[in-house]
Image (cartoon, rainbow, N blue to C red; front, side, top):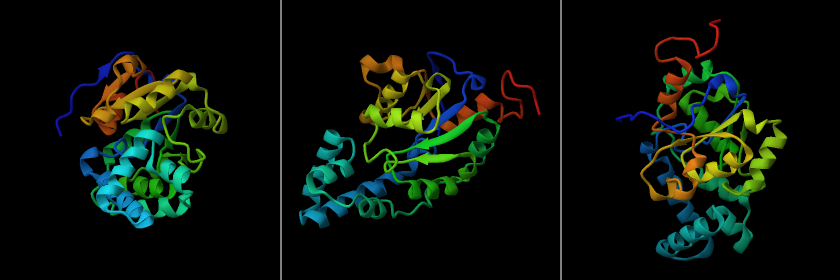
Length: 243
């Protein structure tokens, strides 16, 4: 993958950040793995089986709920009172072999000062599987998942406030990293610094009126953190004394 230089509106000093909040899917691993395509197909299969409709009709409803509620899960809960745990277990039962281990990301996270959390619209068991596959699970103190968020998906602001309160986060000394730019808006509103992992899909792009909420745009988290922490060249983190 050809990596472009970050677009920096406001630089981020890693020493000024106490808590790093990372999205999971298409953020901590490359979107090119198409992992979410597997999940997308299983969501469609779940809906088709549950409602006894064709796969085309299931897909239509799936996309409608995603647009209206933020996730298909929320739509199914509101309109069909499904068991969310059953749904989450089914749709996340996928093959993770397309996700490559990332020694670069592991080394960069090891050098990155501050606490690290994952905030995902997926489930914690799935998130832990992915983190273990990448080889970075030991660097995260917790996974704040869709269950912890009371099944309210990003970018609804309430779970962001709950995350901050539950994990004693000062938003002014926190940074959130996401592949869906719209999901960074509530974080920015709380005072967090924000990093968008660029993608071509229209729904991942920042809204024109909200571009100012994105402090830094990057291609990959691993490359960005490797440079930010000096891991690529074995240098100390900028402004930090070496161990």
